[in-house]
Image (cartoon, rainbow, N blue to C red):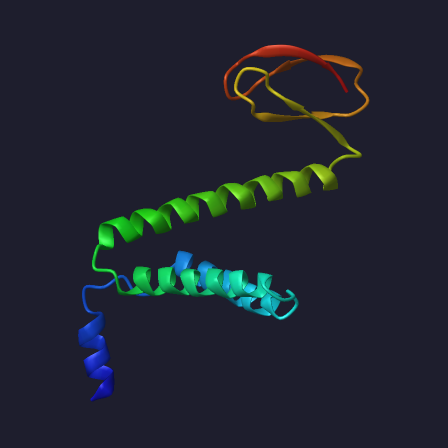
Amino acid sequence: MMREKLARFMAGRNGNDQLNLFLFAIDAILLLAAAFVPGAAQRWVYLALLALLGYIYFRMFSRNLTRRREENGRYLRLRYRLRAAWKLRREKWVQRKDYKFFTCPACKTTLRVPRGHGKLKIVCRKCGNTFTGKS
């Protein structure tokens, strides 16, 4: 009975998505940090906690699905870009002894060249730009 009422109430609303889960994790971290903040500054942390929690509930109960999906899509794109940058950095670190990495001056693509071949003419596979570099 209660489950059906909740299902009817949430029909046509945004509910929880990845951005809300991320914001909730930030809220939990702020709650833990508030325990270590002294005095008057603690009030500001609690105020930020309440504001963030209010925004989470606003997003969850919102009927403007288009806007909430756009927000979630922007968050997912940003998260993907950050993860891809981290993965590239990790790959460069693992391969640093065997390869030298260059950035194409035209399109900013990362290019990999084997080490120990002296001065090379490097051709970007993405844009076709040619430049020289020492491996």
